[in-house]
Image (cartoon, rainbow, N blue to C red; front, side, top):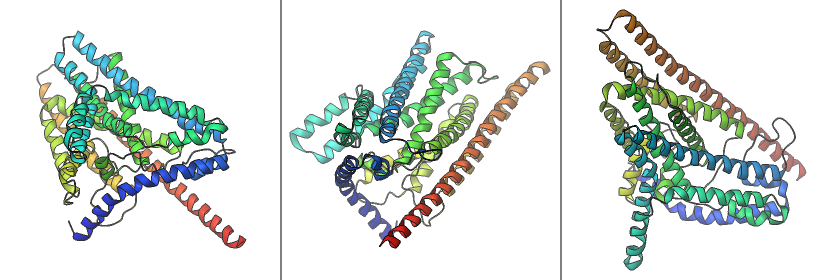
Amino acid sequence: MTEAGERSQLRGEAAVPAMTEAWGRRSQRSSEVAARDPESLQEDQRVPCCCGLFGPPCSTCFRIFMKYTVGRTLQLALYVLDIATDVGVAVADYNNGDTVFASITLGLVFAPGVLFAIYQFTEVLTSHTGFLACLKAPLWLFSFPLLPLWPVVRDLRQIYHGIMAMLPSKREEHLHHLDRPSRAYLIKFLEAFTEAAPQFLLRLYKITLKSQNLPFSQFETIEVAQLSFSLLTLAMKIISTYQKNVTTQQIINGDMEDNQQFKLPCCIQIVATVWWASFLVARFEAMALFAGAYKWWIFVVIGIHVVLVALFQTMAVKKNRIKRIFIYLFSGFIFIFAYLEFNMKARVKVAPWFPYTIYAVLVFMENSIMLVLWFFAQQIATFSLPEADKEVFTTHREYLIFVHYGAFCFGLLMMILTFCCLSKRSQDINGKDNEEEMRTVLRS
């Protein structure tokens, strides 16, 4: 790493306390503006919405209701249903005698809490000494079974403040609470990528084992529910992470809600969610089929991803080096499933769509290789069967390949549509800014 790059990283770390302090000033300033002029709430917080695109802008109360009440309620319901279906699948596996899958499924439910507890344990040891550290650090390690409830309590409080903020007389006070940062988002972030994603892959793998010659031909209702909620959780968390400008530095410092910069109107969020849901379906299908045919070789694929992505990132900064290495290894694990705009090495500036295109090409190539290997393994396994049975298995394999490439191409189309909408919206915003600047000049 160059000396200039190291200085840049150190400056970024030094800016974190300033960002936290700036949040207090920004929250107070936005509350004061909202109190003076409630209709300027959305413009002051720079929260884009589809209001005004197809008709007159919505009222302030309606925007608060949709963003903080309806939005938080849907997030809470999705979070609870995702965990509940995982527990339900674990119970069903246990009743069917699959104690190994039941144990793994139930263990993954508590994996985010364990990781967060370990993170907080190291934070206490590095920031406190003496009796305080000896008292607080073990409490975090023993608190991991309760940590999944933290986002639930957080969302319930946000829903309450969202309802109260619709009253003009109490808007200023409750908007202050709504904008207050919290590390509960880090729990949700971990839940998506260390619980929902592995659960999705594990369940597809188990389904392939039910009938290896006809994979994905037998689904139970509880499995369909679990897969649906896990997929939706993962896709929505990718969009949420993009909107919050989450970086590896924020993960290292645990301040992922201190710098909320929402970028996408709700209509583009829907298109982007469909994009990633389609990509994830194709990705998980290829990985599950490969794992069903080659078993433990899937961990070789995962290991190569983690190592390559971790090495691609900058680790030469002296401060928090050990923690940084673990965070970069974790981000390498995330890149198995999705591309997120973390702090990566960048020698030249490129268009926003370029890294996503590179990632899509790499995933397409890797999925294709895994599908080809799986196809030949299936042909060898069914070579000695009668012609009638071989025809049935061949038709099913071709159907699965069609599903994979259909989902991937549809996701690619949604990706192109997303960036086209973003480009048009950026031009519109720049045009409005230039027009407003001209008006200001003419008035002066």
